Length: 200
Image 1 (cartoon, rainbow, N blue to C red):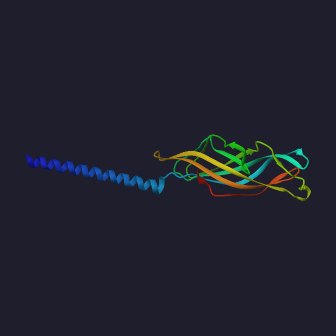
Image 2 (cartoon, rainbow, N blue to C red; image 1 turned 60 degrees about the vertical axis):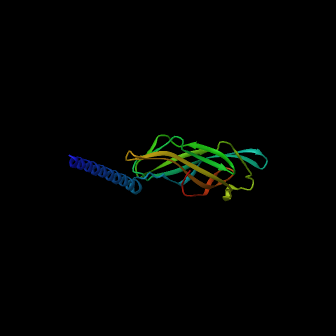
Image 3 (cartoon, helix red, strand yellow; image 1 turned 90 degrees about the vertical axis):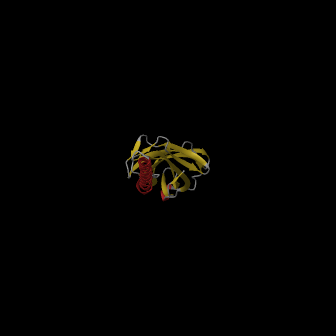
């Protein structure tokens, strides 16, 4: 009788050890899958193209002009995850001149980026108030433009879930420095340079 009880305890202990080992093996397997293939990552953001969409010049005082313009920012977003990336409606593109934010716009709504794919979005941003500049030295007939240095900040916000288990909420920023050439009647993008997108 005692021997039977001993065998039962031994079998229970052996079963418990097997259960623990299987649980540990499953946890290790999930960790390997998480870090090797399914760990959620932030999307990468680039801006390959910028163009002028509007330009207006008004006179405020002798030798000074009040200018407004609009920019079209072509934003490319790549989703490296195994699941779709849902772009949230709070994603924005903003313009900065000096220390002041002078324009902002929301991204087009309801965009879903498929797994390991990229989309390109056109985001239109207008100056929300005129900037006062001196254009007297410019001569558009000979291509003489006044360079205006501004910055754009793209803020991509969204979330992704891989295999129904691993989730991430992303807040990614991309900063670009832009030189806008201002003339008396026309304007153009002289140059722009963007850094690498990073997590906020």
